[in-house]
Image 1 (cartoon, rainbow, N blue to C red):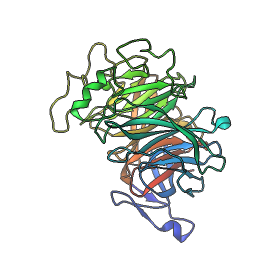
Image 2: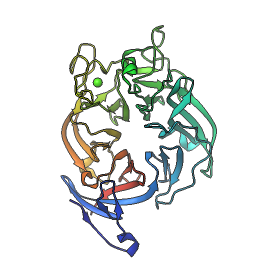
Image 3: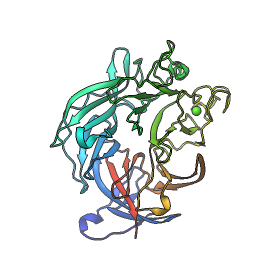
Image 4: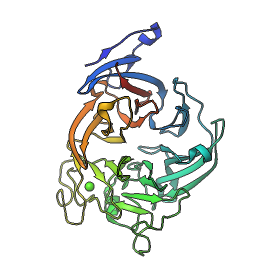
Length: 382
Ligand SMILES: [Ca+2]
């Protein structure tokens, strides 16, 4: 249960109210299996924050789904929206989504954004990049480096997370756009629907992508059979991409992404249609990769990290996943490629958790997907 620490000023005592009506103070202490944690409100008043990316000085770039990118300082102050960001289609699940820094941000100041892009045929997931001005008020020389093909009429399943690998390629996780008539495209290599792309930072195709040179496949595709992936991270030791995707009713999946592999949707799944019937041909099939872990009922996953900080020695190497419907920060213990234990944190707060990030201070930061969205900092209580 919630144990609030009310200290310092009267202002700090003013309770915030979560989506579920739970009283929530500026600082809150909770017990976990590995010790007590202190959950602090870094900032509030964000409009459905979707992603957090730490700048080298410890401040954050934060996207808001309706279309704004802001700097949130470590002291919680928020900048005005940064100019130059792309126009987004903010209907439904669309809008401004992930933000990632170039691996050479220190010298080139390049920032990458994924977003729902309107265009001929409807909309699709796209990636833009631009240079963050020295005063951090503008993105300059913004160009769209990738657009998912084709655009369709849907307001759902845009993915998307942006992850650089250790060789400087950019992974873009996407969705299959949700509607029944689009679903089968997740098995169709002539579209980007339901795939993970791997591109160079300028949007060109790496020579060693698995489908390069095939006339029946788009060369950006790295893996396919994906339903809707809003969580992805590079494994810190193997350098391999791990991805978590939304199932339908049941069957959220944790997958290890291999080049050219087929992750099965909608042929195999642990989930069912929202209205009850089975989907596809069961839970496993030859030539299709099984998830290494699945959630039924779903957690509705968004955002993940492999924790590597010093603040929580007992959590090193654990995988943390944001949960929307589950209103939880899910902690997974791993043994190689096996999940050995799961714990759910922050569940009682009733906040939809949209993104998870590790700060340079080793604390864990989460963004809550609410009208009054917050950034919360999670640190050891002692
Ligand atoms: Ca699958």
